[in-house]
Length: 176
Length: 439
Image (cartoon, rainbow over all chains, first blue to last red; front, side, top):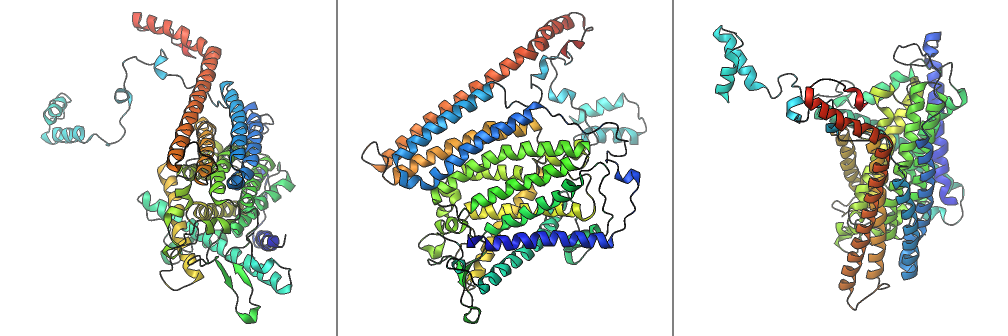
Protein backbone atom coordinates (compact mmCIF):
# COMPACT_ATOMS: atom_id res chain seq x y z
CA UNK A 1 0.00 0.00 0.00
CA UNK A 2 3.06 2.25 0.27
CA UNK A 3 2.64 3.06 -3.41
CA UNK A 4 -0.49 5.02 -2.54
CA UNK A 5 1.44 7.44 -0.33
CA UNK A 6 1.94 10.09 -3.08
CA UNK A 7 -1.72 9.71 -4.03
CA UNK A 8 -2.70 10.44 -0.45
CA UNK A 9 -0.35 13.43 -0.42
CA UNK A 10 -1.89 14.79 -3.61
CA UNK A 11 -5.39 14.17 -2.23
CA UNK A 12 -4.59 16.35 0.78
CA UNK A 13 -2.78 18.98 -1.29
CA UNK A 14 -5.57 19.15 -3.88
CA UNK A 15 -8.34 19.48 -1.29
CA UNK A 16 -6.18 22.00 0.54
CA UNK A 17 -5.72 24.05 -2.61
CA UNK A 18 -9.48 24.15 -3.21
CA UNK A 19 -10.29 24.88 0.44
CA UNK A 20 -7.71 27.65 0.85
CA UNK A 21 -8.89 29.37 -2.30
CA UNK A 22 -12.49 29.18 -1.12
CA UNK A 23 -11.52 30.71 2.22
CA UNK A 24 -9.53 33.46 0.48
CA UNK A 25 -12.47 34.10 -1.80
CA UNK A 26 -14.74 34.31 1.26
CA UNK A 27 -12.44 36.90 2.82
CA UNK A 28 -11.95 39.18 -0.16
CA UNK A 29 -15.35 38.98 -1.87
CA UNK A 30 -18.36 41.10 -0.98
CA UNK A 31 -21.47 39.48 0.46
CA UNK A 32 -24.68 41.36 -0.28
CA UNK A 33 -27.29 38.69 -0.86
CA UNK A 34 -30.77 39.70 -1.89
CA UNK A 35 -33.84 37.59 -2.35
CA UNK A 36 -33.56 37.84 -6.13
CA UNK A 37 -29.92 36.80 -6.16
CA UNK A 38 -30.66 33.73 -4.07
CA UNK A 39 -33.60 32.59 -6.20
CA UNK A 40 -33.04 29.86 -8.81
CA UNK A 41 -31.61 31.38 -11.98
CA UNK A 42 -33.87 30.91 -14.98
CA UNK A 43 -32.77 33.73 -17.27
CA UNK A 44 -34.89 36.33 -15.52
CA UNK A 45 -38.14 34.38 -15.48
CA UNK A 46 -39.57 34.09 -11.99
CA UNK A 47 -39.42 30.39 -11.12
CA UNK A 48 -42.96 29.10 -10.94
CA UNK A 49 -42.53 25.42 -10.28
CA UNK A 50 -40.32 23.31 -8.12
CA UNK A 51 -37.59 21.26 -9.80
CA UNK A 52 -38.95 17.92 -10.97
CA UNK A 53 -38.53 14.96 -8.71
CA UNK A 54 -39.56 12.44 -11.34
CA UNK A 55 -37.56 11.61 -14.41
CA UNK A 56 -38.26 9.46 -17.45
CA UNK A 57 -37.82 5.82 -16.55
CA UNK A 58 -35.21 5.45 -19.30
CA UNK A 59 -32.62 7.10 -17.11
CA UNK A 60 -33.13 4.44 -14.45
CA UNK A 61 -33.06 1.74 -17.11
CA UNK A 62 -29.72 3.03 -18.38
CA UNK A 63 -28.36 2.95 -14.85
CA UNK A 64 -29.40 -0.69 -14.49
CA UNK A 65 -28.00 -1.68 -17.88
CA UNK A 66 -24.77 0.05 -17.01
CA UNK A 67 -24.37 -2.24 -14.02
CA UNK A 68 -24.72 -5.29 -16.27
CA UNK A 69 -22.06 -4.00 -18.62
CA UNK A 70 -19.79 -2.83 -15.86
CA UNK A 71 -19.89 -6.28 -14.34
CA UNK A 72 -19.06 -7.75 -17.71
CA UNK A 73 -16.08 -5.42 -17.95
CA UNK A 74 -15.01 -6.34 -14.44
CA UNK A 75 -14.88 -9.97 -15.56
CA UNK A 76 -13.15 -9.09 -18.83
CA UNK A 77 -10.21 -7.26 -17.25
CA UNK A 78 -8.67 -10.20 -15.39
CA UNK A 79 -9.05 -12.31 -18.52
CA UNK A 80 -7.46 -9.59 -20.67
CA UNK A 81 -4.47 -9.23 -18.36
CA UNK A 82 -3.94 -12.97 -18.00
CA UNK A 83 -4.99 -14.11 -21.47
CA UNK A 84 -1.49 -15.09 -22.59
CA UNK A 85 -1.21 -17.54 -19.69
CA UNK A 86 -4.74 -18.91 -19.76
CA UNK A 87 -4.60 -20.32 -23.27
CA UNK A 88 -7.53 -21.89 -25.06
CA UNK A 89 -9.57 -22.48 -21.92
CA UNK A 90 -9.70 -18.77 -21.12
CA UNK A 91 -10.71 -17.82 -24.65
CA UNK A 92 -13.55 -20.35 -24.82
CA UNK A 93 -14.79 -19.34 -21.38
CA UNK A 94 -14.81 -15.65 -22.24
CA UNK A 95 -16.48 -16.34 -25.60
CA UNK A 96 -19.33 -18.18 -23.88
CA UNK A 97 -19.61 -15.43 -21.29
CA UNK A 98 -19.63 -12.69 -23.93
CA UNK A 99 -22.19 -14.57 -26.02
CA UNK A 100 -24.51 -14.70 -23.00
CA UNK A 101 -24.11 -11.00 -22.28
CA UNK A 102 -24.47 -10.12 -25.95
CA UNK A 103 -27.64 -12.16 -26.18
CA UNK A 104 -29.21 -10.21 -23.32
CA UNK A 105 -27.98 -7.01 -24.96
CA UNK A 106 -29.76 -8.00 -28.18
CA UNK A 107 -32.91 -8.73 -26.20
CA UNK A 108 -32.75 -5.32 -24.54
CA UNK A 109 -32.34 -3.54 -27.85
CA UNK A 110 -35.17 -5.47 -29.48
CA UNK A 111 -37.39 -4.49 -26.55
CA UNK A 112 -36.51 -0.85 -27.20
CA UNK A 113 -34.77 -0.37 -23.86
CA UNK A 114 -32.11 1.79 -25.47
CA UNK A 115 -34.36 3.89 -27.67
CA UNK A 116 -34.39 7.57 -26.89
CA UNK A 117 -36.53 10.39 -28.10
CA UNK A 118 -39.27 10.28 -30.63
CA UNK A 119 -39.32 7.75 -33.41
CA UNK A 120 -37.43 9.06 -36.43
CA UNK A 121 -39.85 8.37 -39.25
CA UNK A 122 -39.50 9.52 -42.80
CA UNK A 123 -40.61 13.12 -42.82
CA UNK A 124 -41.91 12.70 -46.39
CA UNK A 125 -44.73 10.60 -45.02
CA UNK A 126 -46.22 13.64 -43.36
CA UNK A 127 -49.16 15.12 -45.28
CA UNK A 128 -47.85 18.56 -44.38
CA UNK A 129 -44.90 18.12 -46.71
CA UNK A 130 -45.21 18.37 -50.43
CA UNK A 131 -44.26 15.08 -52.11
CA UNK A 132 -41.95 16.63 -54.67
CA UNK A 133 -40.01 18.88 -52.37
CA UNK A 134 -36.25 18.65 -52.36
CA UNK A 135 -33.66 20.05 -50.03
CA UNK A 136 -32.91 22.77 -52.55
CA UNK A 137 -36.49 23.79 -53.06
CA UNK A 138 -37.24 24.44 -49.40
CA UNK A 139 -33.99 25.73 -47.97
CA UNK A 140 -34.37 29.43 -47.52
CA UNK A 141 -31.36 31.42 -48.60
CA UNK A 142 -30.14 33.77 -45.91
CA UNK A 143 -27.85 36.70 -46.59
CA UNK A 144 -25.68 36.82 -49.66
CA UNK A 145 -24.21 33.33 -49.38
CA UNK A 146 -24.50 31.59 -52.71
CA UNK A 147 -26.42 34.44 -54.24
CA UNK A 148 -23.71 36.48 -55.88
CA UNK A 149 -25.15 36.16 -59.37
CA UNK A 150 -28.56 37.37 -58.29
CA UNK A 151 -27.05 40.23 -56.32
CA UNK A 152 -24.78 41.25 -59.17
CA UNK A 153 -27.65 41.32 -61.62
CA UNK A 154 -29.74 43.32 -59.16
CA UNK A 155 -26.91 45.79 -58.81
CA UNK A 156 -26.56 46.13 -62.57
CA UNK A 157 -30.27 46.73 -62.84
CA UNK A 158 -30.11 49.44 -60.18
CA UNK A 159 -27.15 51.16 -61.82
CA UNK A 160 -28.94 51.19 -65.16
CA UNK A 161 -31.65 53.20 -63.48
CA UNK A 162 -34.48 50.90 -64.38
CA UNK A 163 -34.83 48.90 -61.20
CA UNK A 164 -38.00 47.37 -62.49
CA UNK A 165 -38.39 43.81 -61.33
CA UNK A 166 -38.98 42.47 -64.82
CA UNK A 167 -35.42 43.31 -65.90
CA UNK A 168 -33.95 41.11 -63.22
CA UNK A 169 -34.94 37.72 -64.59
CA UNK A 170 -33.54 38.62 -67.97
CA UNK A 171 -30.17 39.53 -66.53
CA UNK A 172 -30.30 36.40 -64.47
CA UNK A 173 -30.84 34.33 -67.53
CA UNK A 174 -28.02 36.09 -69.33
CA UNK A 175 -25.64 35.40 -66.48
CA UNK A 176 -26.60 31.75 -66.50
CA UNK B 1 5.43 -5.40 -10.09
CA UNK B 2 6.22 -1.80 -10.91
CA UNK B 3 5.73 1.11 -8.60
CA UNK B 4 8.21 3.57 -7.17
CA UNK B 5 11.35 1.65 -6.17
CA UNK B 6 11.89 3.97 -3.19
CA UNK B 7 8.52 2.99 -1.73
CA UNK B 8 8.98 -0.72 -2.33
CA UNK B 9 10.95 -1.63 0.79
CA UNK B 10 9.76 0.13 3.88
CA UNK B 11 9.01 3.82 4.22
CA UNK B 12 11.17 6.19 6.22
CA UNK B 13 10.85 9.92 6.75
CA UNK B 14 12.85 10.81 3.63
CA UNK B 15 10.55 8.66 1.48
CA UNK B 16 7.53 10.52 2.83
CA UNK B 17 9.19 13.83 1.99
CA UNK B 18 9.91 12.66 -1.55
CA UNK B 19 6.29 11.49 -1.93
CA UNK B 20 5.03 14.90 -0.82
CA UNK B 21 7.46 16.64 -3.18
CA UNK B 22 6.21 14.50 -6.07
CA UNK B 23 2.63 15.40 -5.19
CA UNK B 24 3.52 19.08 -4.89
CA UNK B 25 5.25 19.10 -8.28
CA UNK B 26 2.21 17.38 -9.78
CA UNK B 27 -0.13 19.92 -8.18
CA UNK B 28 1.81 22.86 -9.60
CA UNK B 29 2.24 21.17 -12.95
CA UNK B 30 -1.46 20.33 -13.33
CA UNK B 31 -2.44 23.86 -12.37
CA UNK B 32 0.01 25.43 -14.83
CA UNK B 33 -0.97 22.99 -17.59
CA UNK B 34 -4.65 23.68 -16.94
CA UNK B 35 -4.02 27.40 -17.12
CA UNK B 36 -2.17 27.01 -20.40
CA UNK B 37 -4.82 24.63 -21.73
CA UNK B 38 -7.58 27.18 -21.16
CA UNK B 39 -5.46 29.78 -22.96
CA UNK B 40 -4.62 27.32 -25.75
CA UNK B 41 -8.25 26.39 -26.26
CA UNK B 42 -9.42 29.98 -26.38
CA UNK B 43 -6.60 30.97 -28.69
CA UNK B 44 -7.06 28.06 -31.11
CA UNK B 45 -10.85 28.31 -31.15
CA UNK B 46 -10.38 32.01 -31.75
CA UNK B 47 -8.15 31.42 -34.75
CA UNK B 48 -10.46 28.71 -36.09
CA UNK B 49 -13.34 31.16 -35.87
CA UNK B 50 -11.31 33.90 -37.52
CA UNK B 51 -10.85 35.85 -34.31
CA UNK B 52 -7.68 36.71 -32.42
CA UNK B 53 -8.58 35.31 -29.02
CA UNK B 54 -7.18 36.55 -25.72
CA UNK B 55 -4.20 38.85 -26.33
CA UNK B 56 -4.19 41.51 -23.63
CA UNK B 57 -3.21 39.95 -20.31
CA UNK B 58 0.47 39.03 -20.48
CA UNK B 59 2.45 38.09 -23.59
CA UNK B 60 0.08 36.61 -26.21
CA UNK B 61 -2.66 36.73 -23.57
CA UNK B 62 -0.99 33.90 -21.66
CA UNK B 63 -2.08 35.26 -18.29
CA UNK B 64 -5.73 35.60 -19.30
CA UNK B 65 -6.70 32.50 -17.31
CA UNK B 66 -4.90 33.86 -14.27
CA UNK B 67 -6.76 37.15 -14.64
CA UNK B 68 -10.08 35.36 -14.92
CA UNK B 69 -9.28 33.27 -11.86
CA UNK B 70 -8.39 36.37 -9.85
CA UNK B 71 -11.58 38.04 -10.96
CA UNK B 72 -13.64 35.04 -9.85
CA UNK B 73 -11.87 35.07 -6.50
CA UNK B 74 -13.19 38.58 -5.85
CA UNK B 75 -16.74 37.84 -6.95
CA UNK B 76 -19.65 37.45 -4.57
CA UNK B 77 -20.19 33.85 -3.53
CA UNK B 78 -23.87 32.95 -3.49
CA UNK B 79 -25.52 29.86 -2.10
CA UNK B 80 -29.09 29.78 -3.43
CA UNK B 81 -31.84 29.82 -0.81
CA UNK B 82 -33.29 26.56 -2.09
CA UNK B 83 -29.96 24.77 -2.30
CA UNK B 84 -29.02 21.76 -0.23
CA UNK B 85 -26.14 23.54 1.51
CA UNK B 86 -23.98 20.49 2.31
CA UNK B 87 -24.16 19.01 -1.18
CA UNK B 88 -23.78 22.43 -2.79
CA UNK B 89 -20.53 23.06 -0.93
CA UNK B 90 -19.26 19.49 -1.31
CA UNK B 91 -19.84 19.17 -5.06
CA UNK B 92 -16.96 21.37 -6.33
CA UNK B 93 -14.53 19.39 -4.18
CA UNK B 94 -15.86 16.13 -5.59
CA UNK B 95 -15.24 17.50 -9.07
CA UNK B 96 -11.79 18.95 -8.58
CA UNK B 97 -10.11 16.43 -6.27
CA UNK B 98 -10.60 13.42 -8.59
CA UNK B 99 -9.33 15.64 -11.40
CA UNK B 100 -6.09 16.14 -9.45
CA UNK B 101 -5.87 12.47 -8.53
CA UNK B 102 -6.36 11.14 -12.06
CA UNK B 103 -3.14 12.82 -13.02
CA UNK B 104 -1.18 10.65 -10.57
CA UNK B 105 -1.01 7.63 -12.87
CA UNK B 106 0.23 9.51 -15.96
CA UNK B 107 3.96 9.05 -16.58
CA UNK B 108 5.20 12.41 -17.82
CA UNK B 109 8.94 11.91 -18.24
CA UNK B 110 11.71 9.38 -17.90
CA UNK B 111 14.39 7.75 -19.98
CA UNK B 112 12.93 4.66 -21.58
CA UNK B 113 15.60 4.24 -24.25
CA UNK B 114 18.21 1.46 -24.25
CA UNK B 115 16.35 -0.75 -21.83
CA UNK B 116 15.79 2.01 -19.26
CA UNK B 117 12.87 1.48 -16.89
CA UNK B 118 11.98 5.18 -16.93
CA UNK B 119 13.17 5.68 -13.37
CA UNK B 120 15.69 8.23 -12.15
CA UNK B 121 17.82 8.32 -9.02
CA UNK B 122 18.25 11.23 -6.67
CA UNK B 123 21.84 12.31 -5.99
CA UNK B 124 23.66 10.64 -3.11
CA UNK B 125 23.21 13.40 -0.52
CA UNK B 126 19.44 13.02 -0.90
CA UNK B 127 19.58 9.32 -0.17
CA UNK B 128 19.96 7.90 -3.72
CA UNK B 129 16.25 7.23 -3.90
CA UNK B 130 15.06 5.76 -7.18
CA UNK B 131 11.71 7.08 -8.42
CA UNK B 132 9.52 7.08 -11.50
CA UNK B 133 8.45 10.24 -13.27
CA UNK B 134 4.85 9.98 -12.22
CA UNK B 135 3.17 10.73 -8.93
CA UNK B 136 2.31 7.14 -8.22
CA UNK B 137 2.56 3.89 -10.12
CA UNK B 138 -0.13 2.02 -8.25
CA UNK B 139 -0.50 -1.67 -9.16
CA UNK B 140 -4.09 -1.16 -10.37
CA UNK B 141 -2.91 1.72 -12.56
CA UNK B 142 -5.58 2.40 -15.13
CA UNK B 143 -8.32 1.04 -12.86
CA UNK B 144 -7.48 3.92 -10.54
CA UNK B 145 -8.01 6.30 -13.43
CA UNK B 146 -11.39 4.70 -14.16
CA UNK B 147 -12.38 4.90 -10.51
CA UNK B 148 -11.49 8.58 -10.34
CA UNK B 149 -13.33 9.44 -13.52
CA UNK B 150 -16.40 7.68 -12.07
CA UNK B 151 -16.06 9.66 -8.85
CA UNK B 152 -15.95 12.89 -10.83
CA UNK B 153 -19.50 12.17 -11.99
CA UNK B 154 -20.61 12.58 -8.36
CA UNK B 155 -19.41 16.15 -8.44
CA UNK B 156 -21.66 16.90 -11.39
CA UNK B 157 -24.65 14.98 -10.04
CA UNK B 158 -24.53 16.50 -6.58
CA UNK B 159 -23.97 19.98 -8.01
CA UNK B 160 -27.15 19.66 -10.05
CA UNK B 161 -29.11 17.99 -7.29
CA UNK B 162 -27.93 20.34 -4.56
CA UNK B 163 -28.64 23.52 -6.51
CA UNK B 164 -32.38 23.35 -5.97
CA UNK B 165 -32.96 24.60 -9.47
CA UNK B 166 -34.60 23.02 -12.51
CA UNK B 167 -32.04 23.20 -15.26
CA UNK B 168 -28.98 22.15 -13.28
CA UNK B 169 -30.93 19.10 -12.13
CA UNK B 170 -31.86 18.13 -15.68
CA UNK B 171 -28.29 18.69 -16.74
CA UNK B 172 -26.91 16.48 -14.00
CA UNK B 173 -29.31 13.64 -14.80
CA UNK B 174 -28.23 13.85 -18.42
CA UNK B 175 -24.62 13.90 -17.35
CA UNK B 176 -25.01 10.73 -15.34
CA UNK B 177 -26.67 8.79 -18.13
CA UNK B 178 -24.07 10.01 -20.60
CA UNK B 179 -21.09 9.30 -18.35
CA UNK B 180 -22.13 5.78 -17.46
CA UNK B 181 -23.06 4.95 -21.04
CA UNK B 182 -19.66 5.92 -22.35
CA UNK B 183 -17.84 4.45 -19.41
CA UNK B 184 -18.85 1.02 -20.68
CA UNK B 185 -17.35 1.75 -24.11
CA UNK B 186 -14.30 3.32 -22.49
CA UNK B 187 -13.77 0.27 -20.32
CA UNK B 188 -14.13 -2.18 -23.18
CA UNK B 189 -11.65 -0.33 -25.37
CA UNK B 190 -9.21 -0.26 -22.45
CA UNK B 191 -9.43 -4.03 -22.11
CA UNK B 192 -7.72 -4.34 -25.52
CA UNK B 193 -4.74 -2.40 -24.14
CA UNK B 194 -4.58 -4.67 -21.09
CA UNK B 195 -4.70 -7.65 -23.40
CA UNK B 196 -1.57 -6.68 -25.31
CA UNK B 197 0.23 -5.20 -22.31
CA UNK B 198 -0.66 -7.90 -19.79
CA UNK B 199 -0.56 -5.26 -17.07
CA UNK B 200 -2.62 -2.49 -15.51
CA UNK B 201 0.25 -0.37 -14.23
CA UNK B 202 0.91 2.62 -16.47
CA UNK B 203 4.67 2.25 -16.18
CA UNK B 204 4.40 -1.35 -17.38
CA UNK B 205 2.13 -0.31 -20.23
CA UNK B 206 4.69 2.28 -21.38
CA UNK B 207 7.57 -0.19 -20.99
CA UNK B 208 5.66 -2.70 -23.06
CA UNK B 209 5.50 -0.20 -25.91
CA UNK B 210 9.24 0.39 -25.97
CA UNK B 211 11.15 -1.61 -28.57
CA UNK B 212 14.42 -3.38 -27.96
CA UNK B 213 16.47 -1.66 -30.65
CA UNK B 214 15.97 1.62 -32.50
CA UNK B 215 17.05 3.55 -29.38
CA UNK B 216 13.85 2.44 -27.69
CA UNK B 217 11.64 3.85 -30.40
CA UNK B 218 9.58 1.84 -32.82
CA UNK B 219 6.08 3.04 -33.41
CA UNK B 220 4.87 -0.42 -34.45
CA UNK B 221 5.15 -1.31 -30.76
CA UNK B 222 2.73 1.43 -29.81
CA UNK B 223 -0.58 0.08 -28.62
CA UNK B 224 -2.41 2.10 -31.25
CA UNK B 225 -0.81 -0.30 -33.76
CA UNK B 226 -0.74 -3.49 -31.70
CA UNK B 227 -4.41 -3.19 -30.76
CA UNK B 228 -5.34 -2.33 -34.32
CA UNK B 229 -6.57 1.29 -34.24
CA UNK B 230 -10.20 0.46 -33.39
CA UNK B 231 -9.79 0.56 -29.58
CA UNK B 232 -7.99 3.88 -29.93
CA UNK B 233 -10.81 5.39 -31.99
CA UNK B 234 -13.42 4.08 -29.56
CA UNK B 235 -11.40 5.39 -26.65
CA UNK B 236 -10.99 8.83 -28.23
CA UNK B 237 -14.74 9.15 -28.86
CA UNK B 238 -15.68 7.79 -25.44
CA UNK B 239 -13.10 10.03 -23.77
CA UNK B 240 -14.54 13.09 -25.48
CA UNK B 241 -17.96 12.06 -24.18
CA UNK B 242 -16.61 11.37 -20.69
CA UNK B 243 -15.10 14.83 -20.61
CA UNK B 244 -18.45 16.34 -21.63
CA UNK B 245 -16.63 18.14 -24.39
CA UNK B 246 -18.16 19.07 -27.74
CA UNK B 247 -19.70 17.43 -29.71
CA UNK B 248 -20.94 15.54 -26.63
CA UNK B 249 -21.45 18.55 -24.33
CA UNK B 250 -25.18 18.01 -23.80
CA UNK B 251 -24.54 18.58 -20.13
CA UNK B 252 -23.84 22.22 -20.90
CA UNK B 253 -26.22 22.75 -23.80
CA UNK B 254 -26.71 26.46 -23.22
CA UNK B 255 -29.73 26.74 -25.48
CA UNK B 256 -31.69 24.21 -23.42
CA UNK B 257 -30.19 24.29 -19.95
CA UNK B 258 -29.17 27.88 -19.19
CA UNK B 259 -25.57 27.11 -18.21
CA UNK B 260 -25.65 23.44 -17.32
CA UNK B 261 -25.09 21.88 -13.92
CA UNK B 262 -23.08 24.84 -12.59
CA UNK B 263 -25.69 27.50 -13.37
CA UNK B 264 -26.16 28.33 -9.70
CA UNK B 265 -22.47 28.44 -8.89
CA UNK B 266 -20.60 31.68 -8.72
CA UNK B 267 -17.25 32.97 -7.54
CA UNK B 268 -14.51 30.44 -6.85
CA UNK B 269 -16.88 27.49 -6.59
CA UNK B 270 -17.59 27.96 -10.27
CA UNK B 271 -13.87 28.33 -10.92
CA UNK B 272 -13.29 24.92 -9.33
CA UNK B 273 -15.69 23.25 -11.79
CA UNK B 274 -14.03 25.05 -14.65
CA UNK B 275 -10.61 24.01 -13.38
CA UNK B 276 -11.70 20.38 -13.03
CA UNK B 277 -13.07 20.29 -16.55
CA UNK B 278 -9.86 21.47 -18.17
CA UNK B 279 -7.68 19.48 -15.85
CA UNK B 280 -9.59 16.38 -16.89
CA UNK B 281 -9.03 17.28 -20.53
CA UNK B 282 -5.27 17.54 -20.03
CA UNK B 283 -5.19 14.31 -18.03
CA UNK B 284 -7.28 12.46 -20.59
CA UNK B 285 -4.84 13.56 -23.29
CA UNK B 286 -2.03 12.22 -21.10
CA UNK B 287 -3.87 8.92 -20.60
CA UNK B 288 -4.36 8.52 -24.35
CA UNK B 289 -0.66 9.18 -24.94
CA UNK B 290 0.26 6.67 -22.23
CA UNK B 291 -2.08 3.93 -23.35
CA UNK B 292 -1.77 4.12 -27.10
CA UNK B 293 1.24 6.22 -28.08
CA UNK B 294 4.09 5.04 -25.90
CA UNK B 295 3.86 7.76 -23.26
CA UNK B 296 7.15 9.56 -22.66
CA UNK B 297 9.21 6.98 -24.53
CA UNK B 298 11.10 8.08 -27.60
CA UNK B 299 14.60 8.32 -29.01
CA UNK B 300 17.16 10.37 -27.12
CA UNK B 301 17.69 12.97 -29.82
CA UNK B 302 19.38 15.28 -27.32
CA UNK B 303 21.32 13.97 -24.32
CA UNK B 304 18.80 15.23 -21.80
CA UNK B 305 18.06 11.97 -19.98
CA UNK B 306 14.65 11.93 -18.33
CA UNK B 307 13.79 15.40 -19.61
CA UNK B 308 13.83 14.16 -23.20
CA UNK B 309 10.95 11.90 -22.15
CA UNK B 310 9.06 14.96 -20.99
CA UNK B 311 9.59 16.63 -24.37
CA UNK B 312 8.22 13.57 -26.17
CA UNK B 313 5.28 13.34 -23.78
CA UNK B 314 4.52 17.03 -24.21
CA UNK B 315 4.65 16.87 -28.01
CA UNK B 316 2.34 13.86 -28.12
CA UNK B 317 0.02 15.45 -25.57
CA UNK B 318 -0.26 18.65 -27.61
CA UNK B 319 -1.50 16.66 -30.59
CA UNK B 320 -4.44 15.31 -28.59
CA UNK B 321 -5.19 18.58 -26.87
CA UNK B 322 -5.33 20.19 -30.28
CA UNK B 323 -7.65 17.42 -31.49
CA UNK B 324 -9.99 18.07 -28.54
CA UNK B 325 -10.05 21.78 -29.34
CA UNK B 326 -10.46 21.04 -33.03
CA UNK B 327 -13.50 18.85 -32.25
CA UNK B 328 -15.00 21.71 -30.32
CA UNK B 329 -14.52 24.23 -33.08
CA UNK B 330 -15.67 21.93 -35.87
CA UNK B 331 -18.41 19.56 -34.79
CA UNK B 332 -21.99 20.54 -33.99
CA UNK B 333 -23.52 19.10 -30.84
CA UNK B 334 -25.21 15.72 -31.23
CA UNK B 335 -28.80 15.03 -30.24
CA UNK B 336 -29.40 13.02 -27.08
CA UNK B 337 -30.77 9.96 -28.87
CA UNK B 338 -27.82 10.07 -31.29
CA UNK B 339 -25.47 10.21 -28.31
CA UNK B 340 -27.04 7.17 -26.69
CA UNK B 341 -27.25 5.23 -29.95
CA UNK B 342 -23.59 5.87 -30.69
CA UNK B 343 -22.53 4.78 -27.24
CA UNK B 344 -24.65 1.67 -26.83
CA UNK B 345 -25.35 0.39 -30.31
CA UNK B 346 -22.06 1.20 -32.04
CA UNK B 347 -19.13 1.64 -29.68
CA UNK B 348 -19.90 -1.12 -27.18
CA UNK B 349 -20.52 -3.95 -29.71
CA UNK B 350 -17.52 -2.92 -31.84
CA UNK B 351 -15.10 -2.81 -28.94
CA UNK B 352 -16.39 -6.09 -27.50
CA UNK B 353 -16.03 -7.89 -30.83
CA UNK B 354 -12.59 -6.39 -31.43
CA UNK B 355 -11.41 -7.40 -27.98
CA UNK B 356 -12.42 -11.04 -28.43
CA UNK B 357 -10.77 -11.14 -31.85
CA UNK B 358 -7.55 -9.70 -30.42
CA UNK B 359 -7.65 -12.32 -27.69
CA UNK B 360 -7.91 -15.07 -30.29
CA UNK B 361 -5.09 -13.62 -32.40
CA UNK B 362 -2.86 -13.32 -29.36
CA UNK B 363 -3.33 -17.00 -28.58
CA UNK B 364 -2.53 -17.92 -32.17
CA UNK B 365 0.71 -15.96 -32.05
CA UNK B 366 1.75 -17.55 -28.76
CA UNK B 367 0.98 -20.97 -30.21
CA UNK B 368 -1.81 -21.89 -27.78
CA UNK B 369 -4.46 -21.94 -30.47
CA UNK B 370 -3.80 -23.72 -33.73
CA UNK B 371 -5.97 -25.41 -36.32
CA UNK B 372 -3.37 -26.16 -38.98
CA UNK B 373 0.42 -26.31 -39.04
CA UNK B 374 1.38 -22.79 -40.10
CA UNK B 375 0.84 -19.78 -37.86
CA UNK B 376 -0.09 -17.45 -40.70
CA UNK B 377 -2.80 -19.85 -41.88
CA UNK B 378 -4.08 -19.98 -38.31
CA UNK B 379 -4.19 -16.19 -38.19
CA UNK B 380 -6.24 -16.15 -41.38
CA UNK B 381 -8.60 -18.79 -39.97
CA UNK B 382 -9.09 -16.87 -36.72
CA UNK B 383 -9.67 -13.60 -38.59
CA UNK B 384 -12.20 -15.33 -40.85
CA UNK B 385 -13.93 -16.88 -37.84
CA UNK B 386 -13.92 -13.55 -36.09
CA UNK B 387 -15.39 -11.83 -39.13
CA UNK B 388 -18.08 -14.50 -39.42
CA UNK B 389 -19.02 -14.18 -35.75
CA UNK B 390 -18.87 -10.41 -36.05
CA UNK B 391 -21.18 -10.43 -39.05
CA UNK B 392 -23.57 -12.72 -37.20
CA UNK B 393 -23.54 -10.35 -34.26
CA UNK B 394 -24.08 -7.39 -36.57
CA UNK B 395 -27.03 -9.13 -38.22
CA UNK B 396 -28.54 -9.89 -34.82
CA UNK B 397 -28.03 -6.30 -33.70
CA UNK B 398 -29.61 -5.01 -36.88
CA UNK B 399 -32.55 -7.38 -36.48
CA UNK B 400 -32.99 -6.23 -32.89
CA UNK B 401 -32.96 -2.57 -33.88
CA UNK B 402 -35.49 -3.26 -36.64
CA UNK B 403 -37.70 -5.25 -34.26
CA UNK B 404 -37.76 -2.45 -31.72
CA UNK B 405 -38.47 0.07 -34.46
CA UNK B 406 -41.33 -1.88 -35.95
CA UNK B 407 -42.80 -2.46 -32.50
CA UNK B 408 -42.68 1.23 -31.77
CA UNK B 409 -44.18 1.94 -35.17
CA UNK B 410 -46.95 -0.50 -34.36
CA UNK B 411 -47.51 1.27 -31.06
CA UNK B 412 -47.56 4.89 -32.11
CA UNK B 413 -46.73 4.81 -35.79
CA UNK B 414 -49.77 2.97 -37.12
CA UNK B 415 -51.89 5.77 -35.82
CA UNK B 416 -49.37 8.08 -37.43
CA UNK B 417 -48.95 6.55 -40.84
CA UNK B 418 -52.26 4.89 -41.73
CA UNK B 419 -54.39 8.05 -41.67
CA UNK B 420 -51.49 9.87 -43.25
CA UNK B 421 -51.51 7.88 -46.46
CA UNK B 422 -55.24 8.51 -46.70
CA UNK B 423 -54.62 12.15 -46.03
CA UNK B 424 -52.06 12.50 -48.76
CA UNK B 425 -54.46 10.85 -51.18
CA UNK B 426 -57.17 13.29 -50.25
CA UNK B 427 -54.61 16.06 -50.41
CA UNK B 428 -53.68 15.08 -53.92
CA UNK B 429 -57.41 15.23 -54.68
CA UNK B 430 -58.35 18.71 -53.58
CA UNK B 431 -55.14 20.32 -52.28
CA UNK B 432 -56.67 21.46 -49.00
CA UNK B 433 -58.08 20.10 -45.87
CA UNK B 434 -57.35 17.99 -42.88
CA UNK B 435 -53.66 18.12 -42.23
CA UNK B 436 -53.92 17.57 -38.50
CA UNK B 437 -53.76 13.78 -38.86
CA UNK B 438 -49.99 13.64 -38.60
CA UNK B 439 -49.95 14.82 -35.05
